[in-house]
Amino acid sequence: MADKDEALRAIRAHILSDPDMILEDRDVMRALLKAQGGDDARNVVDLRGVLVDRLEDRLDRLEDTHRNVIAAAYENLAGTNQVHRAVLAVLDPADFNGFLTALSHDVTNILSVDVIRLGLESPAVAPGTPLGPKGDMQSTVVALARGGVDAYLTQDRDVVSRKVTLRQCAPDQSSVYGRDATWIKSEALLQLDLGPDFQPGLLAFGSEDPHRFHPDQGGDLLTFFAGVFERVLRRWLA
Image (cartoon, rainbow, N blue to C red; front, side, top):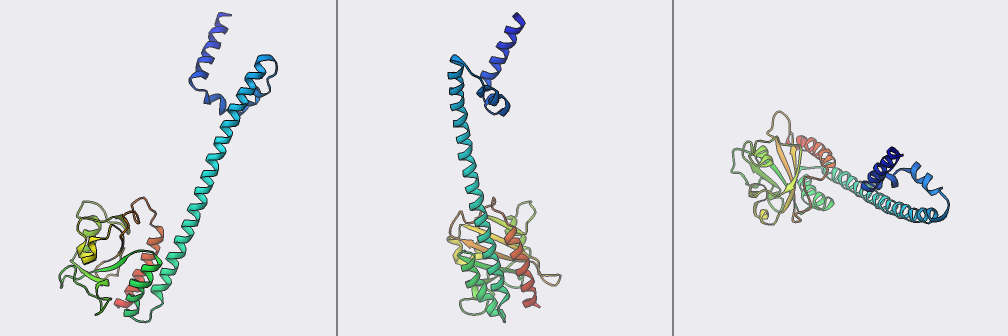
């Protein structure tokens, strides 16, 4: 009898220390809810109320999860549509000037960024020198020093540069954005492989919004865009 009382006290202590153990066990809850009689019936009703509250709370969390999943799905779909439209915009022009116009106007609007810069390593001219055609396209293409793409991506830290880098802006970004560097607060950087005959390039999307790009965002769609863009650019450079 003493052993039985001791076992019951141990079970009671364990339940009191972790009541969720009972509420989370469906078989135990079914057995308790089938109990009948006297004060026990009142206690079971109280327990049923606790269980109902718990289930309602789970339902609320499940609905929140569903809403978040649906919102994320719509956001991903919208992002996919944006990138597809941007790809079509850079594929369509028939000459290089039209290509740069599409990049600085159409792609900027489609992707909802404030400025786009195409950086090309050009050791013959000073870093930051505009290389675009005269007019409003001149600053779209900028010169970078040899090794400037990797240096800007890594900020001269001992890290490996990635195809797509999303971050709040670096302390010194004038070599890429020129005078616009003062108000660019976040950026997406796409490393471009321009083939064996050319130095690497850099496509920079700058935003005034410091939260527009950040490292926790996925970069798959921008990786796809970078792959298309560098192929198109190789054609124009050839």
